Length: 256
Length: 338
Ligand SMILES: Cc1cc2nc3c(=O)[nH]c(=O)nc-3n(C[C@H](O)[C@H](O)[C@H](O)COP(=O)(O)OP(=O)(O)OC[C@H]3O[C@@H](n4cnc5c(N)ncnc54)[C@H](O)[C@@H]3O)c2cc1C
Ligand SMILES: Nc1ncnc2c1ncn2[C@@H]1O[C@H](COP(=O)(O)O)[C@@H](O)[C@H]1O
Image (cartoon, rainbow over all chains, first blue to last red):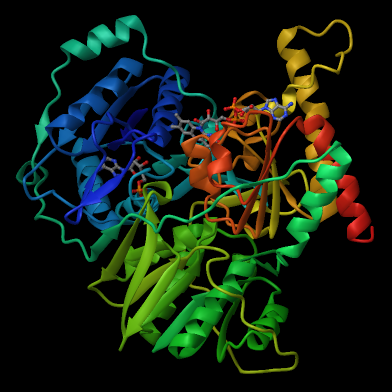
């Protein structure tokens, strides 16, 4: 199995986000591997462990993104590639997908590409299906169980109504949810290996594609209006009395 | 403006956000709806009642089960032929992925999970939350058609007018040799779906914390905790039932094994926006708030007066949920005449 896992580096989920002069800032919060992508790395590693092969982590980003790739290496990925180019600044999802699809083609003979469900910065959840579409591969999204036998794949995937069981043929794109199971922590050995690893960097000319054109523009970013809420604390002599008052108040909101 | 709306349904039951999309389309002009499935003509009638002008009905056994590739091929072909200005989808699992695929096929972009929009001529500017709702961005798309997915419950459902009709056009499914096959379904453990719920009652780690309970002998520590939590979640579910509400949970409750991931609300769970959200034994970590901060009325019961959830709550009770929840269930049952 030749496996690729696509990861993005994002500000930590606890970061306080602000906008100054139209630019997004996360203060001194650390940059981390997109939490959903940890499940993708875990799923990729489990397939490798079951079937043999290699796992290559790839990411489009600036030099700092090497840290996220190192985490993938420390978790157990065999190698990592940074895709970095001055022409790759802000990218919308279809532009991102175009670059990832080109990279997957260049890596060559890939059997499966693993993605996170969505990136917690722009919260789009589109890159996996869009990359699949560009590659002409089936997209098996929101997978919680993956079984590969030969060229056959069987997944259980989360949908609103429960789970859908789908079969398909390699090569495919997977996106993963938390249902798959907890991602592993990097091992001590893994961290040492990752610290020493040389991560090659590919540019657009190396990929042999022109700079992708983003069609989605962010024209104005704002902090959402602060809701002025003061909590009304309900008190009373007994739980029954409190419950009575609270139920009356909620019903008076006329939303039920 | 001409809008094509994808009607998302499961076995003929439309997801309500599909009708919300029809409502948005109607405020902009003419609405054509695409219904894909097998034996789903009855949905066309409902679509007309919600205001759709024309229904494109791709009714074919090959579309009996949702498969992204087969649906996307049919959708993209029709969109290419009919050149709508705008494609609208509900932000559902299927809606999101079809929007993404159609954008590639039609060489355009997607404005995803949109909560507000305005049109100037045929150019649309949307507003959508990013960074788990910590920021809002305005977004535009320079290519055509514009593709938008709408967050559920962010737009009103249009009134349904019985007997209203429109033009029904039967269209073929785009045949293709798609390698994916649907083998079956395992349905979720019942209940109201979180995304559509008017009312959500959620439990957190606090729900496992009833010292008054003695677990059956022979359980190890972890099993005893889960046993305690399940007794606690029975109270959560009881309150939810009295309100016809869906059951949610914090990640701590899900990771603790108290309830399945399908119930998780938050940044790495579901984003919900009900009219009433009742948080029981949930502290209100930023990642939990990310999933429910847009709820209209938030109610919190927590024994810690400093719990951050109270900063977002309209009503709060500082106290023991194991005493308060049964009393609240009884109070609602009485008041709502059940
Ligand atoms: C990348 C990432 C993603 C995450 N995504 C999510 C997510 O999607 N959703 C999510 O919820 N969390 C998420 N988290 C976890 C989040 O940070 C918190 O750990 C979690 O929300 C805490 O859950 P809790 O409020 O149930 O538990 P706690 O924080 O332990 O709170 C329990 C509360 O119960 C109260 N309590 C205890 N006993 C009682 C009683 N008898 N009566 C009343 N109150 C009582 C306590 O006072 C306390 O406030 C994420 C974290 C990370 C790092
Ligand atoms: N810049 C990137 N580099 C590599 N993978 C990415 C990048 N952006 C997104 N992805 C992958 O696509 C998934 C979904 O991203 P998105 O559609 O942007 O929410 C992520 O979880 C990653 O697996």
